[in-house]
Amino acid sequence: MRLKEIKEALEAEVLTDNYDPEMEILLGCSSDLMSDILAFGKPDSVLLTSLNNIQAINTANVADIKVVCFVQSKIPNQTIIDLAIRDGITVFTTKLTMFVSCGKLYQIGLPGCSYLTFDDD
Image (tube, rainbow, N blue to C red; front, side):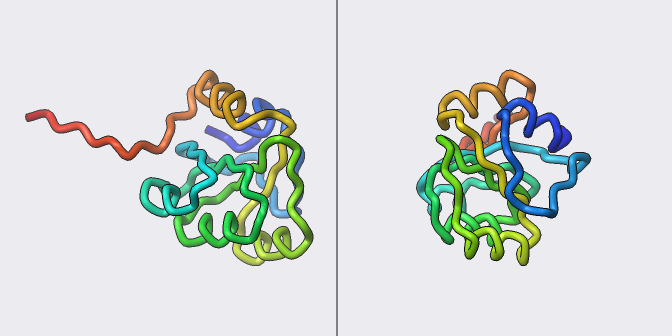
């Protein structure tokens, strides 16, 4: 899914100057527990979080997550934005709640990161 579709669905505002509307995003994930993102997040995902601190960007960087969207109108400070730009992470903010944001992305067809595995056995 193209990043511009995600931005539109979330009614998001871009906070970094590295926004590429054609960037391909494969999955969505959401949590305020960065340990869950490290355990279950996948590369080339968008992370939805209300955790408005530097750990959200550090975690996204380690997990190779390309986009972080802060929900509930949270706007990170300039230090967080500068770190995201340095790490090549695009940052959004949306007025929507985490629940509604996840629902909107699911509704337009973005699959979620999952900790479940299914065997055909």
